[in-house]
Length: 339
Length: 228
Image (tube, rainbow over the protein chains, first blue to last red):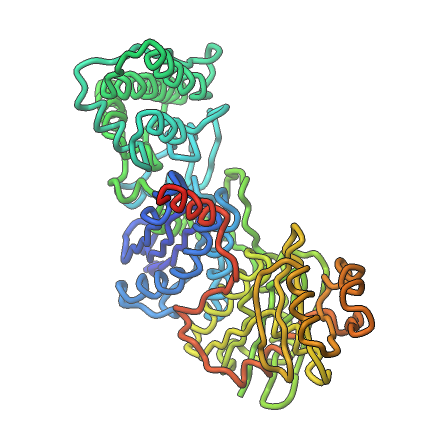
């Protein structure tokens, strides 16, 4: 019989301090997230220095809570996985140094995990992953299409050339004076809307799987400016709906084309923007018609969490890849295969 | 009683292992190696050399700042995580006091400084090992404060050289600077200071930055403007 494998995951790449214990890469034993969002709201976005300060205050409390909820002690664990990058460097360093000290004190192996690999493996916590698999990763910092031909193998087939989708959402939300974070508000306004302002779609050159959202963002800002100059009131619902339609149409169409080209068995969405209702619905309907299984994790597993880091860490650790005490934070880390 | 001491609050890295009244091993350097890369491997190597297992550690001493924000946080995070998971007490000591501890036997004012850019310093003023003042202030303000105390003064810290001309100009014959051998923090000194202080709870042990973030300062300015 194969022994069960328990991984402690730690994630501090942005504004959530999180720790979790996952069994065999798919079963969540405990999952603790301390959000700092209230603290950053007044600044209209995440302030890196403040995020780092909060991580130091929370880190041991969150790890202790993850152990407590799992009713486990450090020697029940098989390894410690931590987000090594990308992310805010000062924030990453708190999780990394806590993970190193914890692993050292308890003689546990240490595994450095790529944040996006974590988002993708959040799906392993919902249903088994089947390969080849196509992942659409959309969040405040990332918009990527990743092809996985096997467990632990990643091929970046498309990425944003400017703003991440979530970043565009936040900027448009600011135009509409919506509170931070703006994504969920735009999603709500768009869903309630009875019309949509027509905005352009950024398809880029033919065949490209890359994305671009800065042009769309400018179009929205210009639209608002022009209306203001003419003294016209804009309909925020129509503006939100028009923006969201443009984002969703491009994301869905490129994901569909890639799914066909690479003949994948599964399509998954991951990252904070995958919590967007409009996007989920569009992808669900498209892939149902296409007869390709489509999955998206529950909303709490779409946003940053440590269970996803433990799940990805489980795969990497099983492949025999560990890190040593000199692990550093890597804000621009690339997504490399470990298998 | 075995102590592990860690200071990463500025460019230098300092680690020491003290058993009762004996310094078993000590490391210090001013090499510009990121603490995130250098600190844990140094702790691991020093403990190994001293033949001490993590579970043998009875107490942790850590320099809590001020200094480089990121640097301070690395040492405090390592220290508090070790203390919590090993279930041992942690004592956090002012990084300026650790520097000043290099001159514990100087019979006058000891002034420890770290450069904080734009003409500002983090400064600690001590007499007979007692804290007179620890603050983030302009160098000019510091020199004025020290001058008014009217006693011989010794400046300590690797950043003293950056400001030495200006210090000498204001304080003249009354001032000396510690030589290179006493310019880096010593984690053994940190541990000796920690022995005299009360431990804090690992979870609530946090850095002392002595300065709010720029975002908060701007936000507060904005609030004040709106209030008026």
